[in-house]
Length: 461
Image 1 (cartoon, one colour):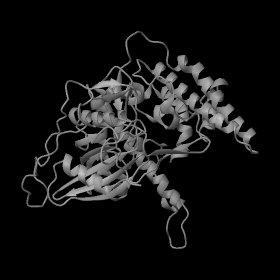
Image 2: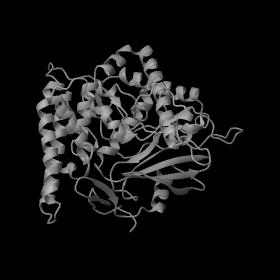
Image 3: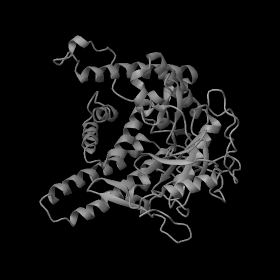
Image 4: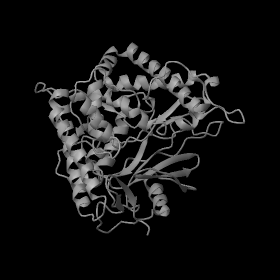
């Protein structure tokens, strides 16, 4: 069934269903999107004339991306499931525009959006410029190490820029006032093409939001901690938070409530696994209790002043960083569910750069080769670890030269970042057992114990 909601009253969660097992859940589309509706909407909102071609591009966990071609212009429209209706879209738009206006990091230009499902497409959507380049994971193995260092230096400069523009609440960025209309003003007609066939400068104008006034505000946290599946309905404080203690306590409460609902579902099961499942839940609730007791240890009470915070893109993966063929940075994309976090959390390596240190490069002769002389895959894994270690050093050197305080906070916040990981994974069916071991070793006062972040590397590399 195609989606079309104009002129009728619909649920704000229209089109969304959750597929659940005991410990996890995944969002699912229950309706098919109407590409003709997408085409008509983009033609109207962006004032497109002439041929317009809409084609499916990709699908993420909560979104579907469509390519909008109106030669010589090319746009992207991202249609999203109503994980957190209205607010997720408003925050993504405001966050992307804040980055565009306040930093040197290249990001897509927001051209239009609709923050409710009451539109011909039937879902919230954002239209933006299509940025050149390919995902980092497609280009990384083909570019020089010097080009890679250039990318790392750009990301380090962005880390310093966000550090220099601090906030004083933990939450998400929103426009100062909710727009009276969901649309941004569309781009004008393109100027004559350059000789190479690409649009000339100024082909797209700076978008103007009709109700844009003043600085953005920090509102409640838009994150999966609070809006994933049944968590959207829980009576839990979502912020904005004054300090890390409030934030951690609210996240633990959200996880505890969600685990309790899953426990009730498990109790209704009538099979041989029930007893084992109860033990599994006991583990989760025990970890949550231990973390609650330790909040004051990791985050001692401070004064009445709110804690300093900064914007963190915590999904800066090899898929969300776009590079040109020559290896230069083209854009960083996917700014949904991005929050303003405490400095101890914000002063960290980009997601794709995190990993296990390897200071000595691998030698091919020390690895197995197959009958055709091809070296074992482990060699390439270790070579990547060696290279990423050198790039982390490049990142930290750049940050240290620009902002020594960033490095100091990073190096003195290991324990707090470990606590954050414990909160994040305390209900994960596999990783919670690493969290439990980490807590137990802490109770025993083990000297030189491995941090939680180090323990988890083997699961993500």
